[in-house]
Length: 142
Image (cartoon, rainbow, N blue to C red; front, side, top):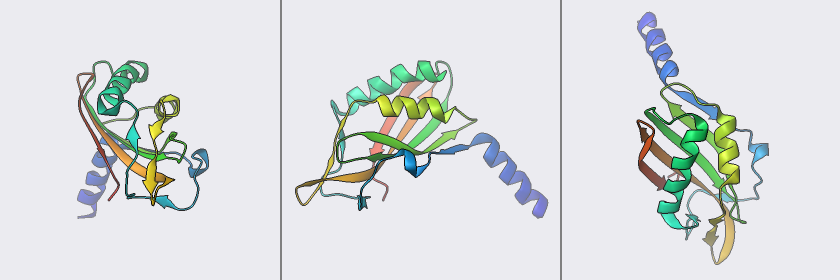
């Protein structure tokens, strides 16, 4: 039984990579909302977000690969995006390239709570098939 568990663990981690960025890298205030009255939105909408990531895939070396990529972002009250957890399956990607790309992303429309701009967490899920972004899902963490 222990051998099966060990084998399952090794297989899981060989196909999944988790890069966690230090929370010090993300400027945040207190509190940070997981769900706000009005959630952050990418400037230009989902179409501009899709164009941004498709362009970045070439820089990341994903031009012919198939992967699932989940990025947990902190969108601060100024609209800046900061990745704090990156999940990549299968294999690994250099999280520093992803982090640099996200940090260079255009500003988001920040979240609003009681009419005030607030920091908020969001998750982006990207499906990449043969280097093409086939699906992008934006959701809150709850």
